[in-house]
Image (cartoon, rainbow, N blue to C red):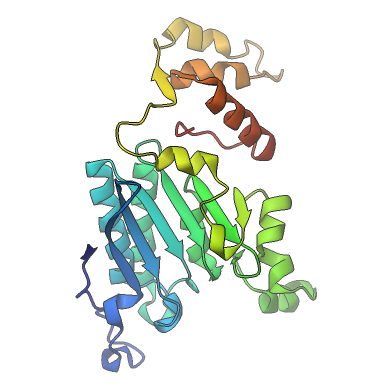
Length: 265
């Protein structure tokens, strides 16, 4: 079920008042996967390069807000060149609305990002703060700025694939959680299958007693000049006990992305 299909931009600068951008370049709505309702948005690169303007950002932000309220998983299909320059600071306002909802959803509902094309600038910030990122071989590109700017500033020749392709982000930077072919985006992800399990399936996490305030204080080091290992205390602070299967997945994620923690696996 698509929502906000009639939304259009309200920009009147640089000739934009004469342009009719269908659904303002992003389709938003709800559907079902394995019988489970999910919220989905998909950016359309054929409409103004998938660029994000004020209304474009508000559409996605409203979708995530409704997903948080209804406790629905959020899936984003990202294919955007970044902010819509013609809208100036209004486009940045659209990003502000989107980032705010991304942060609200963190720890509340799972967020999955599929990078389905070249994404640059602001278009990589939102996927970067979601829970799972899929990079597709020879299609996905994520970078803050492109190869031409890198060459003009650093005098370095580098291809788009070497700068922000699926291989570089899955092997070196750690930005992407999964690298896959276009035909099997979800097939090889046990963690995302857990997020998309049918309603009524056994949960992999069980609540446990909270860690007391005194125990939390003891977890810190009394000497601020000496390092302290906090990883053993993460389980207590987040108040969850994992099944053996989920523990193995957590350990695998710890090796691949040691700084990423969430409660969805």
